[in-house]
Image: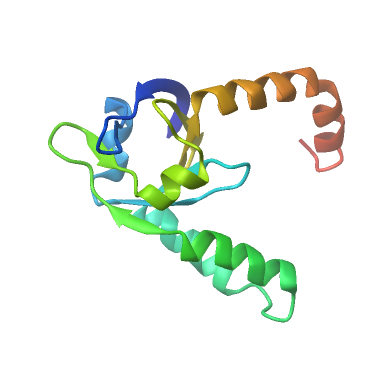
Length: 143
């Protein structure tokens, strides 16, 4: 289970340290891709296979399905965690998420999200201010 948020620095080579409690989940490898809301998604290989299966079963006739598949699949990179617990974030993904120096790694149960720290704080503040409205909309889904 991947939960919590952890602040780290991006080094000059574009690497970040993966929180120690997350590393075992990614022992088989880590798939990084463009996420939603201008962050990077990180999946274990087994979780990635589940995502790919769902995406490839979307109807090709729907433009939103094609656009989503292109966003997620074309931006994917397979990587590994090095002996010091770091992972290299490809330049294209760093640009997509506007990663500079300070980043936040957020555990989202079955994936991680990698955010620029300022962007994460803005997003979190906006979500917190809208929490009542969000909760009401989720109640329609049975949550």
